[in-house]
Length: 149
Image 1 (tube, rainbow, N blue to C red):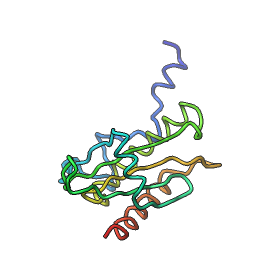
Image 2 (cartoon, rainbow, N blue to C red; image 1 turned 45 degrees about the horizontal axis):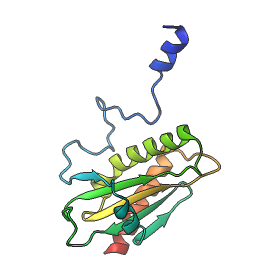
Image 3 (cartoon, rainbow, N blue to C red; image 1 turned 90 degrees about the vertical axis):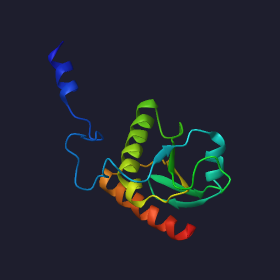
Image 4 (spheres, rainbow, N blue to C red; image 1 turned 30 degrees about the vertical axis):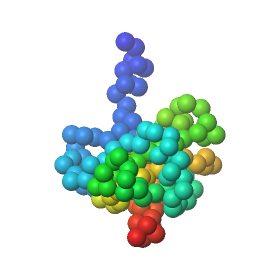
């Protein structure tokens, strides 16, 4: 291995969550609300009919599931959409990693049970820092909780 390869491998990613040493504001591992990932296109399309909260770096959609839906009302679900308008694969994957980390920290405490949450990436001139995005996400979750009742 070359010295350069070693230094790249040793460098921690800014989006990496340290599982051995979690921060004080991260969610506890034994959260009482189960969180699932949305995988079906029909669920993404249904969420598009819900309420939305727009920021400079993302759009947050929230849609309450119907009572006859196969997923229980106690579960919180999330989905992430990042299109090719954002940039190349590296930029899209970085945005998705950041969104997953944001949702992992914010949904257990601020998520709405029985609701599907969708984060849609927006192309920004300058990439927002993680703390700003987290504050925007929590503000959006409070706003949408109020809107959904």
